[in-house]
Length: 210
Image (cartoon, rainbow, N blue to C red; front, side):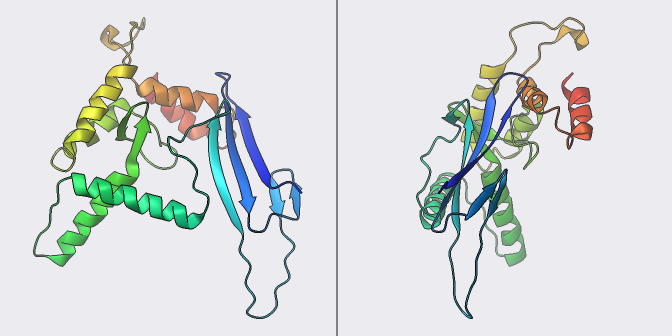
């Protein structure tokens, strides 16, 4: 019985992007196209566990820098450990007001969740889910605004932006300025621009990225 399902798309840049779903505990009874079907009959108070793991790949290579956890418990433990390590390294800001402390805690969690690895460094992505990638302007502004919290993130953002800095002058660009890594976001959107669900976003990206 098949225990995995792969959703794939080949972008206009030729890259093959895959979402591979692996089922465990109770594999589906039937896979119909992109749909997994379980036929379940439960007695009163009976429980059943359905589990799955999601792997993201580009051209057959995992985009994750860490190995896929075997279970959900392991995944949660690894995530909690990473967050605790990050919190131990950044600036701790607290007050004698509980409401203000909750706001600070939420802001820290937002920054942590938006951190994303690009090559060998981390930077703040523009937003989840549709803009979960590197935007030159947005990332550098966010990094400068959280210098008091995590100055290392600003350093890594600058390094990452420098890596993607354009090397060619685009004819017709405003004041002949070189395009920076915002083009990486546009390239990702171009890869899915035929999707019928993204026409408005594509128009916005065209206006923004040229």
